[in-house]
Amino acid sequence: MKPPAPARLQQVHIPFGGGGYEPITSFDSHEGTYSQDHEAIQESLLRFCSDKSWNNSSRSAFMPRPILVSSEHQRQWKELNNALVSAITDIVERWWTDSVSKFPERMPLDPVEEDLLRWIDSQVPSKIHPYRKCRGSWRPDFLIEEDNEGASGSLENFLISEINARFCFNGLMYAACGQQALEEQGIADGSIGFIGATDPAEMIGGIMSLFDHNLPLHLLKGDEHGIDIHMVVELLRTRFGISSRFVLPNDLRLVPNPEDKDGYRLCCVVREGESQVANDLRHASHPSHITDVSNTLRQTGILKVSLQFEDDSSHYLQHLMVGLHKQHGHGLPITHSASRGWFWDIRPNSTSFQTPSHQARSETMEEFPWHTDCSYEEAPPRYFALQVLREDQCGGGTLSVMNVGRLSSLLSTSTCTALLRPEYRITVPLEFVKDDAKRHVVGGLMATDAKGLPSMVRFREDIVTPLTAEAALALQELKNCLLGQKVQAETLQLTSDCLPRGSVILMDNYRWLHARSNVRDPERHLRRVRWDARPFPTSLKANSRVQ
Image (cartoon, rainbow, N blue to C red; front, top):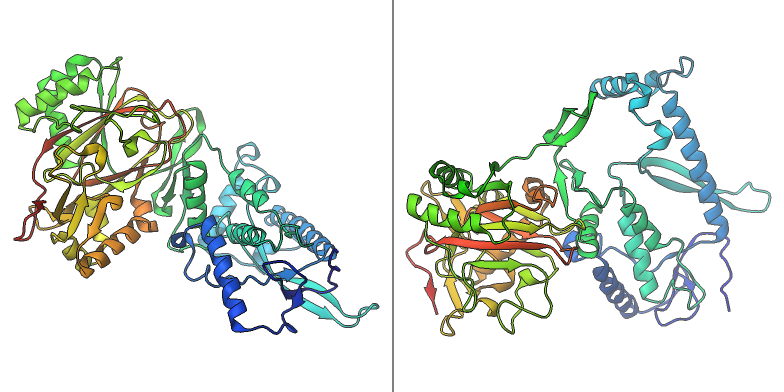
């Protein structure tokens, strides 16, 4: 039987196993019942978003005892929302022109903000969208007023108290996640007569409609942590394979638009990297080009070369490796495994692997979190290069890079010290075993440079095991830091637009961490080479040892 619709808002308890509801005010239950409900709902919430993406204690504060509403309540909210939108739109569009209302005097703004808004308003109308076409995202907070003078008894009036609009998500992820959890627990899926007051899929669809999925996604974010913006970032990455980058307000620039002499483009500053062009294969053997590559790798640790010729056999990299070895003393490329030589093809494959019977992570379409190459080697390669034979043409496979010097500045001194100690076991992945007698290496994860600064690292979370309590704490802080907003703000995102076919990206494997988002194009194909292997530096007396 369908439960009767409530005349007034009320918080209720609905058994997870089904049954009728009862108002919280009259429900008499043991503490154990509440604990069981809480544990069950927490499991559902974690299936939607991992614990690290929830803001502070917001997940644990979720209560599995919903507010029961009626269609009449929803009608009231809809009418209030429509009236609010109409009123604010009308006020904003008349803000500067209505001399009678004098809005700027009645609601004064910060002088800098007012000057900016006046400048925007003074632009040619064709260059800016009308406000009603780009109103953004609002999240009104409201109070409930009881009107005891109504003709038919006590009524509920909804009164707007404030309107939040810091981020375009504004708590939508909380609503979608909570509603989904209630449905999973059988409370709001219709099976016992109750349905959700909102559709979580519709909310997610609304978020996805805010941007073009074929373009890089930048999220403008300042010091404020945000309510659910990190949940959005995780959702986009794990469910849709879309990488996003936090951009600081100070990194925004207005630059002239070459396609419109009177227009501008909004851009963000990219803080690292050099680039060169190789017009033909002879560049790879030319002494000046080889020296430029060597100097850039030594100074900044990252370089992009754009090949202006077809090179599916990677002859450019072969000649460059030989030139760096002869002219600048770089070690020759290492073999990737017992069955592979200099080059390793990075492309999705579920049946045929480059190491028999073992699929490498690079042969999947899954994301590959922060790591350095060959961290499991006693002598990891100092450098590696990736040649793009086919970019991901579906918007995935973004290469993220992060400078280790900047990363270490975000870590506590005690953590950096612990990461320097040889108190970590790093296991060799099965696909890269070269000697059955050498299955792991023990050493530190970080090393200092000539100035004593911790600017070098070897790291891949899934194969690292801390051997002491101090090492475990340091590893946890490192992992938390890599997931934090400060690292994301410092991360350089190299999308397929940045690295199209014919691009070669060369990196210092000690001074730069890298990661890859989910691959969305099954034909994506990169080729990798690693070279100049040398024992990982140690700043302590105890050296790494292979066991």
